[in-house]
Image 1 (spheres, rainbow, N blue to C red):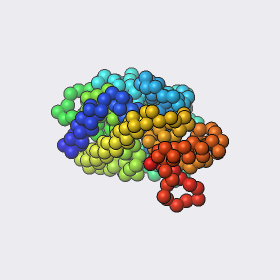
Image 2: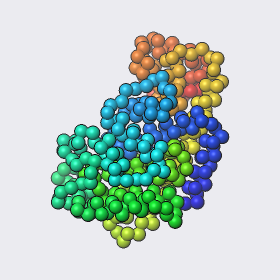
Image 3: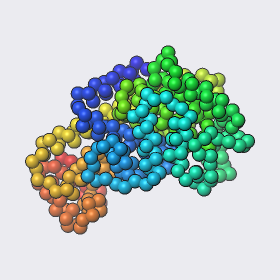
Image 4: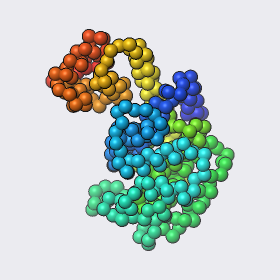
Length: 341
């Protein structure tokens, strides 16, 4: 616990020194990672650029390469931003149901109609399973539907009360507790991670989130489900789960520190090249290289991303090589790769 608190304080100190613009950039990337990776844990892939553009619009961050987002993406983004920006507001049934409605705007989960914006109903047991149809593995059976309202009343009263421990440990307990109750027909995993982000933002004493725990959970998805199962089906000793959760928070902070280092390098680059003549295509690719380019950069990828001819892409690349901004990669391959010099 103390190690995580020290790392968080170190990260916060770095951000305080670096100023508002870099804080916004780090916030934008962290929330984007949270939204995308939390959905990916459930097997649902969102368009990263669409999510980032939606968050940027809500935060008032100017982005020249804005991408349109669909109604579902907008809903997911609004849920995450409400949790983080309004982290000190009480968590109520109404607020949770609003989040749930935003996640399921059609009233369906895939092909199936579900109860939306209310606790689950019906007499059938709520089983948490994995595996293909016909080969399902039951991990846990949640409390019956007629007990959910009572269980959630206790949970919400606890989460809104001052506790004799900090919000980081409270996030670990709340994460597990909400999953155990499983109050909704669907979306419980995404909402419990949203609650986690809300409590971590309280712990950070900030309206913004500077690291993504969901991204770290995704990296350890198999172990994540194993830890949840052991904690919910065993002796009710959740020490192992709490330690594992805090380790993921620590890893998330370390990842954010590395990303912040990249942000600083990007800022230093543009400061040193403020007077360097570059066209919009070149600026777009350079920013992508700093933000995390998908795979190696080739002239064909350049042409596809910038919607230009291969000859134009190659002229852009050779110009950047002459200016010392790009170099040919030393790694072997069928196509010539380029990287920042």
